[in-house]
Figure (cartoon, rainbow, N blue to C red):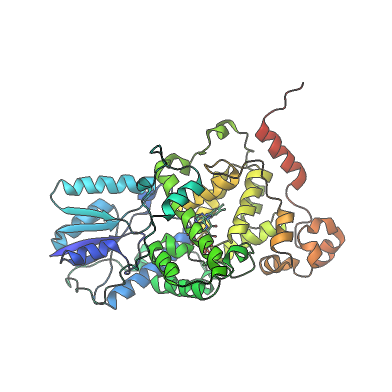
Amino acid sequence: GHALVWFRRDLRLADNPALKAALDAGLAPVPVYIHAPDEEAPWAPGAASHAWLHRSLLALDADLRARGSRLIIRQGDSLAEIEKLIAETKAEALHWNRLYEPASIARDTRIKQGLKSRGLHVESHNAALLVEPWTVQTGQGEPYRVFTPFWKNARQRLDATMPAGAPRRLPELPPMLAGLGVEDLRLEPQRPEPRWDAGFWEHWVPGEAGALELLDAFLDGAARGYKEQRNFPDRIATSKLSPHLHFGEISPRTIVARVLAQAWPAAVQPDIDHFLSELGWREFSHHLLFHFPHTAQENMNPRFREFRWARPDARLLAAWQRGRTGVPIVDAGMRELWHTGWMHNRTRMVVASFLTKNLRYHWKHGAQWFWDTLVDADLANNTQGWQWTAGTGADAAPYFRIFNPVAQAEKFDAAGKYVRRWVPELAKLPDAALSAPWEHADLLRRLAPDYPPKPIVDLKASREAALEAYSGPKTKP
Ligand code: FAD
């Protein structure tokens, strides 16, 4: 007999519990991908996610073919397509790995109920998280809202056993069973050359093999010194696993097991603990989104319900999006994002603070741009990252902690390597002028005539206005 294995964001063969469950039951897995982006509305995947997905699906299909199987691709309403596939294959079971976004949970629940009442064996599994959101609770039986106690609790439950590898062979599919080609889904940018994603693929190899290569490289290299070095945007000092984790090309369990299997010198232990805690932030984001699903649209902290955000000016918003704010570290981050589909965590915080504090725009304007442009766009992590930086989140940096982009550049890009790389028109300025070039008007005019002569908002005045808006109108004594 057959079992449908419905691939979604678990695009791998190793440590794939849905695939394994089908094989363990003695059924021949039918690997299926159904393209139904509207079912994830209002957070249907953005353009950069789709460009990644195109390549990831090609990689998964190739990995399946190397084992004697193949990926059956369909498009349309998921339930309707699954029903057709059940009829075509006479499948006895349906397995999938869980998603945690509110729209996906609602759809999956509907599908499970619809099919179960017809006597089909339907089972979901955990492939994406180290700890399921409903298994970690405070002493009072509540979900956590603060990271440190959450992670202290969750960390104790980490399983260090090495997960199952990819199956060596898979049963052949019935020859008549047909599907679409990946190209038919039109996931890649359709506009003429030069395509906006042209630069992405010098940086990324979507798919399971690319993910494992990055993990090996990280464990052999940047893991040592991670705790300090991870703050510097000009260095290869983090794993860059985020898009692979988002699409499930590697499991967090595999990462943890590989990290814990290695005998690290005592001096490296703080680096390892810190790296695990970043995976812990990913868990925490999913915990928050699962328990507080409204936070994908609304402030977690109700105090901000009445907050006076500024009404976005289309020109200023576009200047932020395209890296033309006149603040070099902000522009470098936004251009790194545009050119590679990724931005360093340090600059994500800096550009988000600039948008939500200096421009005082609601964080959702930034979250939406990130959603369309990041290859690692992830509803849980993006929501949490924006709410944290905006100061509206659960365990947020307080609103009055406003990143000073000049000080950030001086501290984390002192030699200007990051700014020179992504804002090449500033390359000729001396290091000392790179963090606040408007203070060196002559040099700027002479050496970088194409760069904005001053920031689109005055940093000091906008900072004070933000603090004023936060504390509310001052009452006169
Ligand atoms: P590493 O430092 O190697 O960390 C390993 C893994 O831990 C990452 O791949 C990621 O899965 C997880 N992780 C690390 N930092 C965080 C964090 N702060 N929160 C949650 N998980 C984390 N991350 C996304 O994956 N998708 C997003 O859409 C996203 N949007 C963000 C928006 C803002 C405004 C901010 C401030 C952060 C956002 N992050 C997001 C978190 C973080 O910036 C990225 O996960 C990280 O930069 C990815 O690089 P890396 O894989 O080299 O990280």
